[in-house]
Image (cartoon, rainbow, N blue to C red; front, top):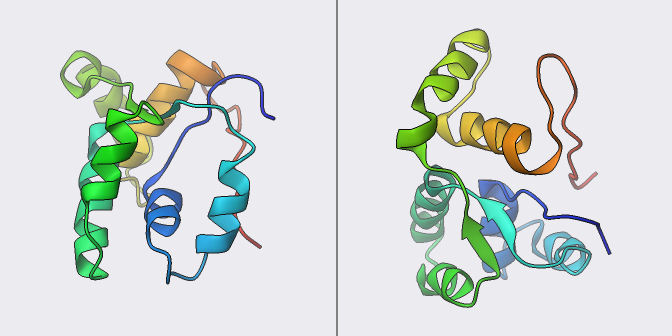
Length: 126
């Protein structure tokens, strides 16, 4: 089991909730190695709800995870807007969404305490 909370991005969240999606089994297996709550942000939840709808899946299980405390929106965009703006400016030559910026900022605040050029560890399917 991982120590401390994990950060949850859109892709793994959608794959976990979408049983017919490509990386569903991998996400379910990795999900077991984290203890709740998995931390995320409202832009990730918005992206996930939209992608689930596009895949023909119901968003209700997303809300169930929130209600049960399995996932938690742990960043206030309004409160962090200055730092989010700085991140998005810094990475303007790369495809950084608001959700990505929120997760990077969340990693600085809550999990890895990464700043500057330090790499944020990421779990991804091969």
